[in-house]
Length: 499
Image (cartoon, rainbow, N blue to C red):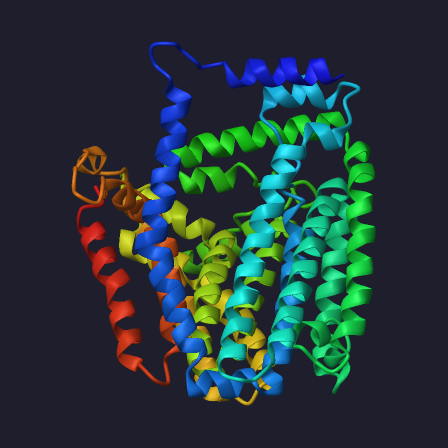
């Protein structure tokens, strides 16, 4: 078995190796260079800004209050739900199609076959959560809120939480239908527990906030981690070969689209075709054209209920983050960043009709109506649904803290409108300009890599900026105006040259 594994891996590694043109080494070198460049330019200043924000007097008061423990519990529930739900679409145990065909159906243990992708996925999950916990624990220890031992317990508890999240991710890949039900139940139970006085302090917020019973709770949490890790080999053997091969082909197709920076096409690969409500008519005529178009957007979303549910959960989570951040002061910026990204992912499935309309206005008219009317009607459904669902989540989140209800209402509605504007802005941009493909040498390297990435992700970056702006609405309203002007100016420019 070992020789079969080594032979397959050797064929895969040497598939493009040429003695005169060692392309794989140059690819690895370029990846290392890009990672270092992005880390120095973007990551280090962001970490420094977050740490300075966390050690401020306002942030220290928030971290010392019960709001921090509630937020810790909510974050733990959200990441577990995300792992249970996300594994249905793409799990950590995935190899290229050739290796999947050669190894997954053989007698080689699945744990050996998938050890490399599992290790990479585990390092990514552990790295993100541990880095965040170290940042928060260090700031709390620096300001004297907790001792060094308590800070270490917080980091260890988040380490255990990260391992549990990884185990849930593998579980979701193995049992997709059961994991979807479990994610819904966990989200509902976690939301109800937050409203029960004192219940959220028991588990797992106790170990996530250095409470008095942190050591006992940490031991119980570690035992749960051991059980989850021991179940991973058995879950890998349970997965069907056809399902593994299907996932590997889908991931390879998505990676090819990401390589050419077609992120929209990459996400559409994971879109399942309608099944249960496939016979539902998406277009139902009415006396008024705008009712027909708006209603078609609604019925088109209902034909894919799982996708619609995922979208609504993301938008609801956006509202929760905005509600939590309404009373966190400087700490609201990271939550606003997450709210912007989550809003873009949630509103995206609701704006399929808007993207279709944007594609039609770049060509000859097919419906006998003006382009402005077509776009203005298509924005009704995504703005209305996202604003309502996000407002409900924001009101629930603000009830768990002591923030301003009016601020949350304005923030959620503004974020929904700006997210739809960013989607329209991205839909109108057309193909990438040729000049972006040119190389521009500089002492810091080639900056055109970042330019192409920013062009491809302009909608997401605008939505993230909108999330940060709404989180600072009470302290810096001018930032909100500046962020709102950016998509409007780009929409006007791209609308002018849409043909």
